[in-house]
Amino acid sequence: MNYEGRSYDIKVGEDVTNPLQKALTELENVEGEKTLVLEKGEYHIYYNKVCSKNLFITNTVGDRQWRRGTVPHKNKIGIWLENQKDLTIDGNGCEFVIHGQMTNIGVVNCKNVTLKNFSIRVENPDMHELKVIDVGKTHIDFEIDKESRYNRRGAIHYFVGEDYQHKFKRERYGWWYGFIAAGDDNKIVRRGNPLLRTWLIKDIEPHKIRARYIIKAPSFKVGDRFYIFEHLRRYNGIFVDRSIDVTLDNVNQHFNYGLAYVAQDCENLAINNCKFAPRSDSSKLMISAADFVHICSCRGKVDIKDSEFVGAGDDMLNVHGIHFIISKVKEDCIEVRFRHHQTHGFNPLRVGDEIAFVDVSSLLERGKAKIVESKLVNETTIRLKLDDMSNAVSGDAIENKSAVPDVNFQHNYMSRIITRGVLMTSGGKVKIVDNNFDNTSMHSILISDDAKYWYESGPVNDVEIARNRFGKVEGYNVQVMPENTVHNAPVHNNISIHDNVIESGEEGGFYFKSAGNVVLDNNTSDKPLRIEVIDSDVTVDGVKK
Image 1 (cartoon, rainbow, N blue to C red):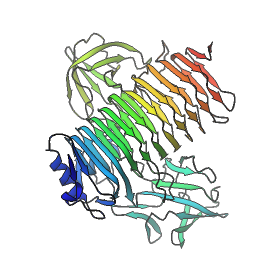
Image 2: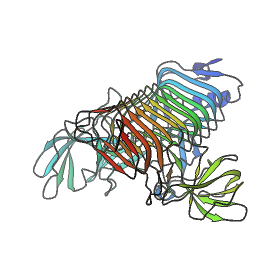
Image 3: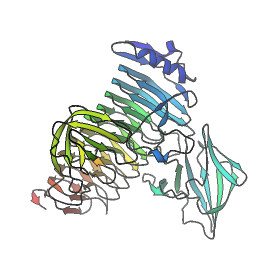
Image 4: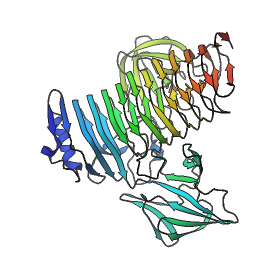
């Protein structure tokens, strides 16, 4: 059944923060399939009116990283969906305009939810472009993008927004800022703040400044672009938690403060015909402070098709589980801990799930057990009762083998990715086919697995990488590199790489470590392919490597 947005006082061109949330609250209690239908146009959402929720979001902000005066894990959410069932929001081509810093959309404990046919843009976001327009011996002239607002108090310049103000020379030692070199607009890498060594910044015209440097100006070129932004992932784009059957269809997201789309402890996710990329009328070429799509400890199927991803501050796609470390072994239970400071506070280990005991040095399984009871004791500790304790060893890791989704990544385009294209560590059936990888500043595809740093599990067992085009890359087109320190047997197995076209110039190629049954067949390249093999079973066009 259709429900018209205007009947809930959701009016084009107006502030819909409260009417939209009221409509969603009312629809939560409506049984059966229902669609909230909006009219085409702009709808405005304001930071000082949205709801706030205490959210623990994987791979975002650790407890000690929150700014002084803020409440850890307190999130403002623009559009909040909780306990929704059988709901579709159809925007009919509308655009939500976000005013202030917030997570754009939250989907928590929902089932069968579809978001479609709308765009999200942020008004004057806290990401600012400085473009070099003149280079002198001791000065650089920069043009500031027209979306940004700034002012000057005394000798100090500030970027300002509805709920932020930051000095131009923020985070003195930060190395995460985006840099796009003149003449190479589709490649983005990390750099420091270009204003750090200045002793004077002055205005020369509206949105143009002159930065004077001590002794000598940096060797920048006219046309170089720098992106200054908040690197802490306090807010994100779309957050999906503990939900089943969630679909994005024709959703365009033009800016987010952290991860553009992050899902944890979910089942069956789809992203179809979406665009996470700059607006056509914007000068900015970078639109995300972190990953575009991040999938953690999910199950069922992850389907990402026919979508475009341009201008990310981290990986385009990262799919992984969690290596919990066993901290205590008792007679009838074990306690396991989150070990990475950016991931904790939720419990994806369910009763009935099968876990594997994993040696942290070799990353090989010692045995398996099923979870009988599971309890989140505190933000970092989960207590588990198991049906078999015989392989539990303090200091080992565990991986949830029931949360290893099948992944279909197909017919997608990516460019201007600051790190890797696809980071894949899922033991389900994985297909990475018919995609265009263009301009990743690290490996196009990385198959990792570690239990000592990021604690992102686990081994892959069935991966097909086929009919992709690999363009510019710094690194390998495919790197299989589990972070084991001891090789006793392959960590990753059954990887088929075939019929790909490689146009990566002097870069690219393949790297395999601790990998079994890897088959490369009929891959073509514009240069001789480099293939590096360490402790692996690799066949190239029918010949053992």
